[in-house]
Image (tube, helix red, strand yellow):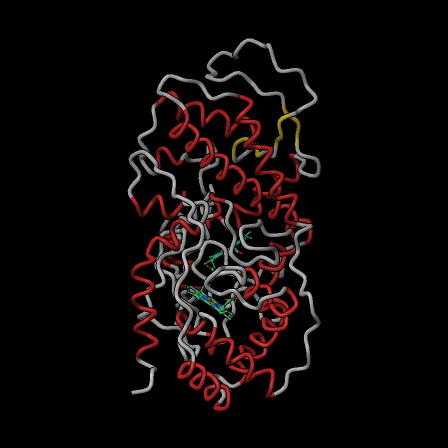
Length: 431
Ligand code: HEC
Ligand code: HEC
């Protein structure tokens, strides 16, 4: 089983109480440089801290600020006790501070016990949970209706709040008033944006600045704007299936089963779709071993509607080795229309597996035939994005938070991957 979900609620409550309950100190957000003991010059640490507060405030006074491009660059003297010159800024339209405070209050009551006050996933109860609560600080979310690499839409965040993530301890918050739901979504976006800015600035300091050099305020402003733009884009990037979902028939299920074997799905999910515990598919970007889902369990974390499964196959799962349909290793279909049809067939296969609590006999036959007659495609190397080197952070931490282009982490075990994938197939090959 991929995930051993929640502790019983009572136990969880005891764990949270024992660990100091979900109320977390409000005065300041913790900094990566401290918690991860990064080897960053003190000067840069102080500047990063000040920029983060400038744009995202403090827990008791959170902000979603943007650089104000229309304002004159400030000539004001650096304020007393300040280490950077202020950048002119405005509150992002739609993110007023009263709502953000409400969001913070809801978050502190309902979420911080698991997700931590900064969104690092290390709330007092987090340590007991598998999978652990999401660390939002790199701005990566798994279950989106947007293409791989994109932010979630607002609807995606609403959906996860309303329904939770089935098969994990992420609860459904159906009882939250709409106002509270919207406010806490804003606040999660503040935490995610703040965390991503922190990563950008740490990288900038590490890669571009010499020890006593200051950050260039214009560069900082560009980072802030870039993060904000990526969130704004998400709402218009919805993945819409190109072709309509055909009726599910034994034939479409068979075709889906063949595709499941012909494409790389079996390499990770196994010929019986139950996920293979022994398949080493590498880590996710949060530094944990990734386990291909057991599809027969039906615990689809990203939703069970056909269109949810479609989007999961089309986009893959951010931050994990689950590839997108455009990945050279999956390459579902030669034209966009063929890809769309094939994805629907895969959806039919997967829903049939769920309904049947396992691969139906006919479909298993189709998989076994395909594996006998077709050598699986050789593993291709997607364009590598290199993982940033961070000073003093050990590898696991780098993988956990700072491998932004998830491929760098996901694919770095390329050699091991092709080895196990070959093995899994030869086990099935005819004598
Ligand atoms: C009991 C612990 C727990 C509580 C309380 C909790 N979460 Fe979660 N949350 C989780 C876990 C575990 C996951 C990871 C699920 C996974 O990896 O599939 C998660 C994932 C998420 C995600 C990521 C979804 C994605 O697509 O990656 C969001 C957003 C989220 N939680 C928001 C919230 C908010 C907002 C609250 C409070 C209103 C909250 N959570 C309360 C445990 C919790
Ligand atoms: C490189 C390994 C790999 C390959 C190839 C792969 N998957 Fe996955 N898949 C994963 C992993 C890992 C997860 C679990 C991700 C997570 O939630 O942490 C997953 C999860 C899933 C899920 C569950 C989604 C949810 O909502 O929880 C589905 C459905 C799925 N894969 C279908 C497919 C299909 C169809 C293919 C072939 C086109 C495929 N996978 C190929 C690794 C892979």
